Structure formats: C-alpha cells, structure tokens
Image (cartoon, rainbow, N blue to C red; front, side, top):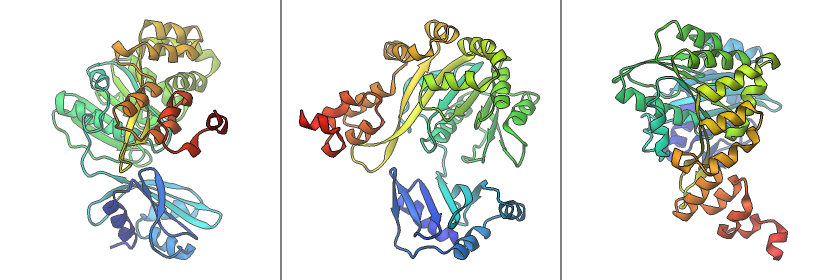
Length: 363
C-alpha cells in the first residue's frame, strides 16, 4: 500500500474536503473551510517526494521531473477516490488531494434551488456553473448530470480534468473522457464530441477562447452544454466570455449569450449554522429578454438589478440567498457576512464583532 494512503484515510475519516502535503510543515486537513494540521512531524523534501512517487505512473513521473505540475485522479487501496495536484515550490514538493465522495450527490441532497432542476429539461443551450476554486462546482455539475442520467434517455459526453465522480449509465448513456488522457484539449474534446451523436456535453473548464468558441457552437447546434468558469458573479461571467474572444467576434458573442445562454449559477460554500459542515449558496441568473437586451447594449453591469427582481423566474442575488439562509437559521451569520457583496445589511447578524469595521463599532 502506498504510504500516502495513511494520510488520505485519516483525512477522509475526519470528513475533510482536502489533504495538503508540503515540505517543512505537517500534513494539513481542510475542515469546513479551515486548514488544520494533524499531529505529525514536519515533512522533508525527500520524504514527500518518495510518497508521491509511489502513486505516479512512469509517464507522470517523467513529466514531473521536467518541471510540470500534475493533475490526475487517484484511487487509494481502500477505494477512496481523490483529485490530485502535485507541484514544486521554493522549499520542495507539494501536493493537494481533494476527496471525491464515493456516491454521486443528488440535486436535492445539495439543497440547490428548484430552478436548477427545471433548467435541465432544456434540450439546447448553455448552462454555466461558476465560482472560485474549491466552491463545489464539480459537485454541482455531477449532481446535474446524475439528474439527467436518472430521467432521460440521452447520450451524455463529459470532458473533465481529471475525472472525479464516476457515473454509471442509467436511463442515459454517459461517456467520461479525461483531458490529457483521452483528449489533447477541451476544445478538441468538444469538437470530437459533436461527431459522437451527443445530446448533452459537459465541458469541465472553459479556460480559453477556442474552448469557449467550440462550446458556443455546440450549444447553437442543438445540444445542451454544461460548463464552468472561474468567475464570481453572473455579470463577471458575461464579461469574461465577451472579453475572451477577439474584438471582431464580440457582437456575435453577445448575440449568442442573449439567445443561447440559459442560465448562470454562481456559488460559494458557506458554513452551516452549527459550523460542522458547509453548503452551496447560489446566485442565479436565468436568461430573459431584459437581460438579453442589457448584454447586447453593453449594460451587463445592470444585470444584478434584474436578479433582485427576478424571483418569479427563479433568480436571486448571492446576498438574497445568504440573507434567506441566515433568517432560516441555516447559515453561520459570520461566514455569510464574509461572502456578502453589500455587507452593511448583514452586520446586525454578526456575532464576532471583531469582524466589523471600526467605524461601525463606534456607532
């Protein structure tokens, strides 16, 4: 058994989301958003390099020796599955292991708003799940794929980097392909997928102009496309897509967004009221005529106002969702305060007054 499995087993037993290994410090666990060391000696460079070398393939080892970071999935001997990133830094080797639950979560188990499930009834268009790294985008997408898999007889092609949740075909057929293993790039993966009679295409990360362009083409030509971006609001998502493409393509891009973008779901992970776990809290934009016009007339900065008044269509701002969670006593008000855009309205709920601006305390 690889020696690193002992740390992974300990971490998953504690219910952590990530296990961090770095030279000069003991192993650390990400527990409900906080990084906590375990009782162990500081790791040495040769020691840690020996640990990670035991789980790398020959090809991965050669790539790592030439200075490349590695991203891959790893299955421990006890069956635990992890998304792995191995890298080098000033003091030596570093590695982060993201624990992947053994079963695919459902949308209901994630407590996502009902509109998310309704969006999956569409047969064509694009749905984007966005957020910073570590906000549960992959988990939400896996639950969305699972929802389709259980209810519709479709061909789903999922392009991932790396493959995290492993789906078993139920009503649908699911084909999972991995960046770097099965396809050379996401753009090439989408191009190939369009020749494989797909109904749904999941693009694990829309990280460059060519991938965005191919995903847009797929959405315009009769496919439901699910994708991700590292953006922190609907407005920033719209702007990122427009700015990613050449100037001469921007009018066409704005037309696509107003006609084929179905929704943007932006999420953060916020501690529950008991501080023992976290759950996703979402800002949701559902495309309508008013938002489409704002995009086409370069007024995306006004989209937030549409979200605030779009409750009947399933829309909400992040602040609205956070406030509902606090009022229902489901969220830790101190953690919610950190994620709020307009923090002033959340100040009265904060229990740790050291978080508040000094001028507010003076009042």
